[in-house]
Amino acid sequence: MLTTRAILTRFQYIDPRLMDIVIELRNLIAEVQPNATETIHRKGLTYYDASRGGHVSANICQIVIFDDHVCLAFLQGVFLPDPHHLLKVEGERIAKRFVDIHDYEKAPWEELKELVKASAAFNPYEPEKKPSG
Image 1: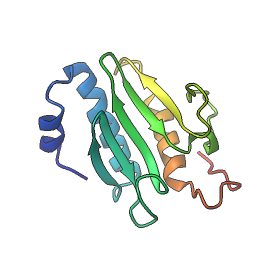
Image 2: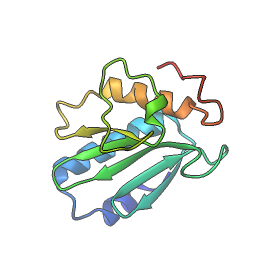
Image 3: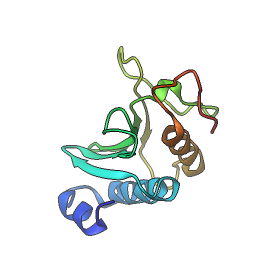
Image 4: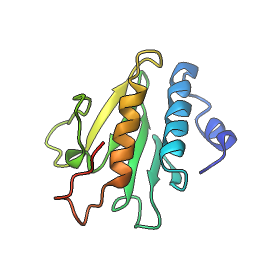
């Protein structure tokens, strides 16, 4: 994982309330998948398991930063268990699902952790084996 300093420097323009959400999500992802590869992209961060593939085939999740919220996105979200009905779909996307987080205090942290765990365990080459979470 990248250093917190590198993240804070890259996203120094972000509203501090949103940055708190980003840092907490990073901590959650690091707890669930400590060996995840973290990369910076234009609007946020991507996490994947490099031992299984690249940022798409072995994707765990993405943190996407908007002006008024943070989005936790799952490229293969359609395959994840979602007992709390947090995952949303936009437009005609086939597999990608996401959760918008507007407020740190109101974020469902434990449920988000379950989604990250399920995504980290998901193998896109065996989609019929839906991960439990």
